[in-house]
Amino acid sequence: MDEESHERIRAVVASIPPGHTSTYGQVAADAGLPGRARLVGKILSEDGHDLPWHRVLRANGTAAPHIAQEQAARLREEGVFLVDGRLPRGQRP
DNA sequence: TGTTTGACAGATT
DNA sequence: AAATCTGCCAAAC
Image (cartoon, rainbow, N blue to C red; front, side, top):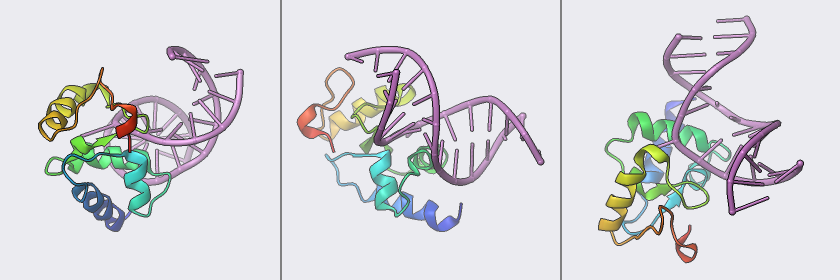
């Protein structure tokens, strides 16, 4: 992979507005890398410390197990409430 | 050089 | 509805 993609993905995540959410696949697509959802996860895990990674959920509106707590807490502060660890139907990206 | 693994997604069973 | 399989890419072993 090249630095270009890496930066582009970071840019897309950084551009997600507060109180709004997106998905790994969506971020990848917006970055011009359809089908690279996994790559997004890897980048966030390694280089996403300064990004709003909590606004990125899985395609079905659930969060990854390890960070689910953080994710829910941070989103709650922005006005996004998770029901039973997942984003309610109407609010799914 | 070949396998395994991972903050995923979509189709199938 | 939940478990399983396949595709995807890069990094670590």
